[in-house]
Amino acid sequence: MATVRSLRILRLLPQVASRRFKPCPRLQVDQAVYHHPSHCISQQWRAFRASCVASGQVLQFKLSDIGEGIMEVTVKEWYVKEGDKVSQFDSICEVQSDKASVTITSRYDGIIRKLYYDVDAIALVGSPLVDIETDREQDGAPEEDVVKTPAVSHEHTHQQIKGHKTQATPAVRRLAMENNIKLSEVVGTGKDGRILKEDILNFLAKQTGAILPYDEVKQPAPPVASTALKTPARSPPPAVQRPAFTGKDRTEPLNGFQKAMVRTMTAALKIPHFGYCDEVDMTELVRLRSELKGLAESRGVKLSYMPFFIKAASLGLLQFPILNASVDEDCQNIIYKGSHNIGLAMDTPQGLLVPNVKGVQGLSVFDIAVELNRLQALGSAGELGTADLTGGTFTLSNIGSIGGTYTKPVILPPEVAIGALGKIQVLPRFNSRGEVVKAHIVSISWSADHRVIDGATMCRFSNLWRSYLERPSSMVLDLK
Image (cartoon, rainbow, N blue to C red; front, side):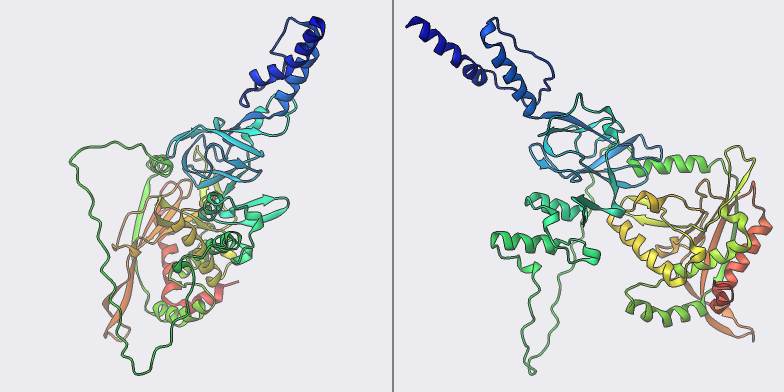
């Protein structure tokens, strides 16, 4: 009887051990770590070790190399939290470099176990972002080349799930994540199948039977009797939030875009700037734009004066290609650029950004307007991508949209010229018959790299550019 009882105890030992020594899911066990003096149950311990590995491994997900020599980024927003389950290509977080905002996506299926950074913290390229517990067994140790994580720019915000391309903004992704909705299951009603906020709310309502909020549903207006008096509803005046004055100094670190401005302006100080100013009579252009504005709006595009300024600059660069060039670091060679990538200095919530319109020499005024509409929308939303912010060859600044007449623009290296436009003013001028007439005048301020561009070249280019704007019909002769 004692022998039988001993055998029963030996059979129960592995079960007791599995209850007492449950493996920690955050430990990676590759070799045997438990030993028992009894030879009779060594085989049971080997089975226990195999179950520990099969339960999953915790992998460090590292920040990918975004490119452009970027070594650090600022974590702007987390789309996940500890304990969340993620799939491949799900959004992990949004980071901001000195060039653009980038959405980092997961390369693993698993559970988030640790977030290494808080919001607004500085993360170094190659350092861990999160720990992800995977459900599958890895062959050997985790790869150190995890730094090659897919990084998706906001210009192409999408997910790639089982071959299905899902387009959505970060705000829509966050809404879907908070409600545990897979974007691949939602049908997008936006342009090119883009998922909108309303699509998420409608999908949630169908799943839960919930009623959408009143402001999310377009209610038909009730019929109004013809005899009723229409009294316009007075909207309350907007509340003006006054800045709080504490009287105390405070220190804040520079963000990514501010650091980029420091580097760019420091490099610009090495360039000897040559300044040239003039004014342009835009009376005919004002008349032409007023005629074309309605036609452009019927096509869904807002037509400003900037497309005309940019196209006139491109036509001038064809005659003076040295203004669409750059010099090497030793200033021994001039590189003439093959494309007119004309940048537009833009005031955004992130600060001053200069996206550029690529290949202006092959675009019409309407094509440029379409591209400017896209860039301005992305700039207002803080979603300009690296491709939009790099590769510029010539720059115009429309500072006059805020105010001012003349200015002294600073060249953006490695470019060699920049122009700044003042505000349009209605001023008295003499016509060809000596009569005083009303004219729409805008001032232009040019800065050029005096190492390679002389004053005569800048003056001739400005005269040609001005002639295109004062007589817009003359541009038709040189359009291709």
